Image 1 (cartoon, rainbow, N blue to C red):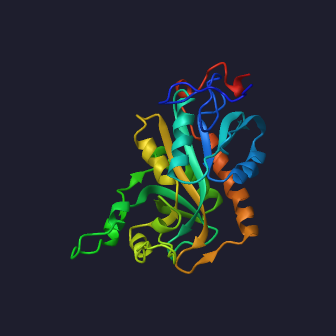
Image 2: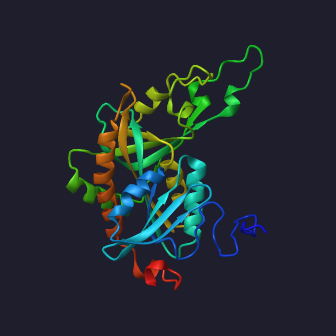
Image 3: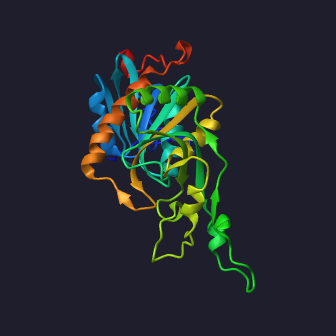
Length: 300
């Protein structure tokens, strides 16, 4: 006899327990304050900073959700995995399980196009732009037609800002602890890791040779990664229910190709992660916008 759950409603599938199709969560397992990471192991590292762990859900697709308390405040750690589609699953399915306001802060890793940022700095996004590879620009063109420009092949979107109140709160808290290493500026999120972030490849005709220069020439370009833009984009479309901010540990200098050591990365994930978690826990949410369902694990 099959033990696989049965899902209903193809538009937003839920199983018989009310669990979502991809993340595997149900009402009461996600708090109003969410810290999202692309890496499951980073969630495992950060969960040690919870005063009390209340529940854990690991879905068949590898999404990990851990909810616990920090100074009595419910906080959820979510491994959203990598890329726009996974961020879409993570944000849409968690918001659907939360009443009121959801505050979501991303703590990721990134490269930097900037000569003013260094490996080990923490990039906090004032705003974010997406970088989308246009497949149509790579198709064969009629004879005599001009070759597509880089702008046609790789579209860089208009900027989407972080939530102002959340950004200012995060900046204030993090500046006190890391005054020499907090870098504030624009995040760029590629739809892929290789082509749309300007990484040259010998096996494909990516035609992205000047993409990194385009990004570096834009005002306040501090970070390049793969998820934050979609988080900000969804927040902008959420009818005011989702407040978003984005931070990322700089692990690579794109111009020089330098990369962080594993030891330094582990140390900084600890230091920055603990600070970001406590900043998230202290961000004020009005009482009438907090989840108070009896199913909430922090109310039992």
